[in-house]
Image 1 (cartoon, rainbow, N blue to C red):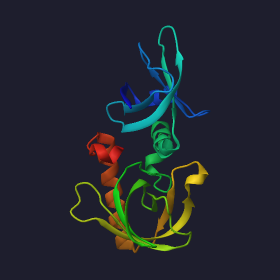
Image 2 (cartoon, rainbow, N blue to C red):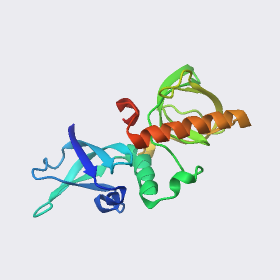
Image 3 (tube, helix red, strand yellow):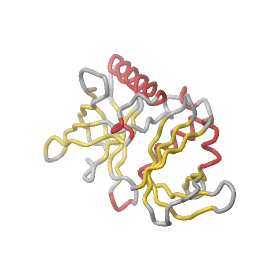
Length: 211
């Protein structure tokens, strides 16, 4: 996989490089790789914006001045794109019910066959999406231990499966889980997500958390 670093001068430039009609990203390049090349785009959104890793495949080129490559992003990048769209349009970060932070955190949960170890795709104060090829059935109650960087103990939370995605759905398989929390637990989760987001925006999260 070819790694490409893209530094936008401001978050607003994201609107210029991303095409929502077909989910593609344009990257300026003097020598774009051939069509079919898998790429990893390390995107920096200005000095105060997030760093996001986007994975895709080169599907075309643009020639002439300001030419480069066009990369189609996979389904796994959807929440990262949603977060970026909200960030550059402003205001979304203050609406927690809409905020879904696209971070990869280790998770252990109680599966049908015993404890399962996996990762999150995204998280907010209300819930989390957990990657799984064998998601639990909808409405199932589940206990999760979510490891958060720079936190001494994992977050211990209980939730209910709100929806599932299986490989046949042509999306990232897993399950959305809505937390069932007491007031004190919700405050703890909220604080953890706030801290995560600040580290995400400042570029201080570990590399594997952005995968």
